[in-house]
Structure formats: structure tokens, C-alpha cells
Length: 64
Image 1 (cartoon, rainbow, N blue to C red):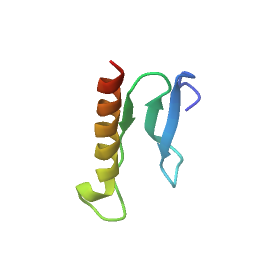
Image 2 (image 1 turned 45 degrees about the vertical axis):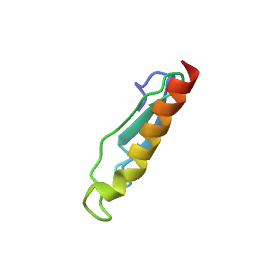
Image 3 (image 1 turned 135 degrees about the horizontal axis):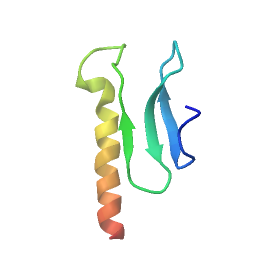
Image 4 (image 1 turned 90 degrees about the vertical axis):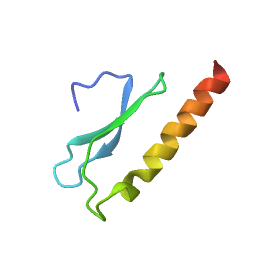
């Protein structure tokens, strides 16, 4: 986390060891998440990320 450039924002962290699990770029339409959902395995725990991604694409297309 201390080595991340200022352009990146931490969006997700592991609850036990505080490791970085998600980042978002401040200026570009880009984000990344890497974690294993613990509450209920399967794609449903992360479905909101797909919604965010689609919204990001729509916003990028509208501004291009």
C-alpha cells in the first residue's frame, strides 16, 4: 500500500490482514479487484463490480 502511486485509490482491503484487494485509478476509467468472497461463494458477491464496469463503459462512450 505504501508503494502505490497517488493516482490509485484503495477500494477494497482484506478484513484480517489489511492487504490491498482492490484499486481504482483517479483519472482513467480503470479498476481492479482480486479477492475471494467469503460470505457466499459464487459470482453474486461480486455482481456489483460488473454493474460498475458497465456504467464506466457507458460513461466513457458518452464522453468520447
